[in-house]
Length: 276
Image (cartoon, rainbow, N blue to C red; front, side):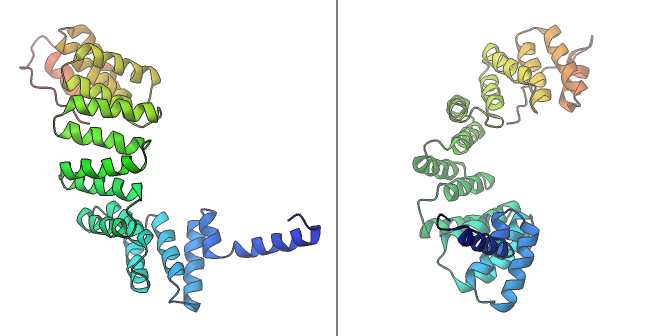
């Protein structure tokens, strides 16, 4: 690039030409065109593993997960020692809700490369979906050990602990995850819900206040659950006001609460149903 204008022009020409290849189109995030290019290239060299894997990944990126898995299967016959193949196929299987099969792929990927935090993360997710909560936490911990700032993994440890009714431990994980990634989706919401589950109503209200002030996508849930906290504190006026705001945002649970608890006749109060 530094030698002469002529060499720059030649390199530029090669670059433009290369962009017609599946690999370059994939790097440019032109996945539909990339898939077509890989398919064309495979007609010439069907036994090229990198082309087969690239074609599968291009299908994957377009969310053609079943087709991608079929292509990964073909690629595996050409090379069964690539951890990337098993990781990528595992992710596709996750999106197909085939968690047992996905788990096998993540195990194989980690057998070939145990230092991939994402593989541990997805293994944790699969174990959670299969209700293997202890194993899920172990996998997420492996991911965090490899990447201490892995906020999503730390957050999910909190989710699993909440599932096990360990709300105090879950709160600590949610707070740690949020400290590492302040923009973490649902981070503040689950902190508030964990405190609500521990009957720390005043503390949960402060967190719900922050969510409401930010006007994020959890706004209706924040009004709903802040209303629950106010109701438990015997402040029916504020509770019903919050439920009305949540109902105006099409929250069905809030609408039901108004009917059951805000009229002159109320039903017996049940335990708060919290959905993390």
